[in-house]
Image (cartoon, rainbow, N blue to C red; front, side):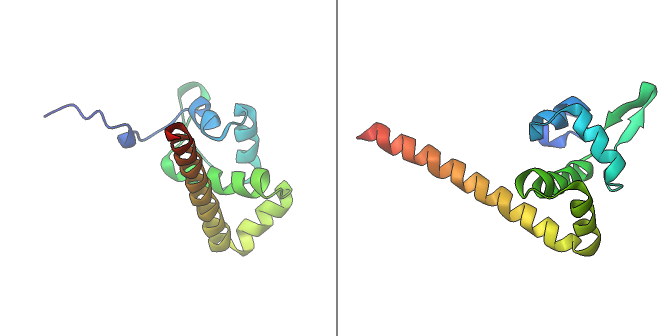
Length: 115
């Protein structure tokens, strides 16, 4: 059996890796765990947290509500209770728009290099 080197096959991520994904402090992630019960990473020996892709998706939604849209933590928690699917869809749309914007910026730079 061949060794699978695809990075997408990673099952768990460390607190440091997740914090880098969202450009936040590790302590902020730990605090969000206390406010949002949906963020519960697996803990192994010595309390080391291991975040699954589902946990990262939950963090993405919370990040969108708190950091991007400016919700207070209580308001974000209430929003998740009342309209979870709306919050999920909004986070997904914003992520897609951010990716499109990045791609357009890259294309613009490439076109400017041709002239």
